[in-house]
Amino acid sequence: ISAGCSSTGDVQGPQGPIIARITDYIYLGNLNAAYSGRVLCTNGIDSIIDVSSLPRDRSLSIIPCTCGRAGFRHSWPRLRVDIRASLHGGHHEIGQPCFLDINECIEASVEKGKRVLIHCRDGYSLGPTCVIQYLMVKHSMGLLAAYGFVRARYPLNIQECHQDLLVALEMSLQPGTASLACLKHSLSRKMAWS
Ligand SMILES: [Zn+2]
Image (tube, rainbow, N blue to C red; front, side, top):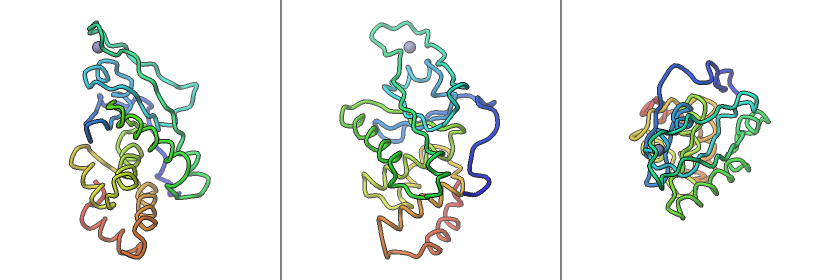
């Protein structure tokens, strides 16, 4: 794990809510969006996958939406998935249980026509990585295509440890198509991961 892997800084951060629709039922956002009832309500979010790994004692509460519209959902089930703990176990593998859980949860939402918001702590790396791996695993998209698809819809800044995860996943899904060095080179040249 590279030193810059884990998110640091203020829990809530200075920035406002950021949220974007990636597919009909998959949304990406930052921490502020995920705890703003107003943002969740106006975007019609049904449930939340939280990969922020915030300590329980620092857990935030949702700022209630005050629109008062009857029939609009004003509570949101939240699935917490602690990916950092798994990553620090030393395995850069995306086939591990936490990602299987995430993919199952996304699939269940999509099948029911429910909108799910995936968010991490800073909003720019781990959450998008979860969505990119979902597109690769469940929609058979190559890494470059999945990355480009998400980047066209949401601001990204994928950290190196998460890049490594995605590159390793690409190698396991498309064995023999490119060497690891080759793939990382073309990624850094064409996309610079930002
Ligand atoms: Zn509302």
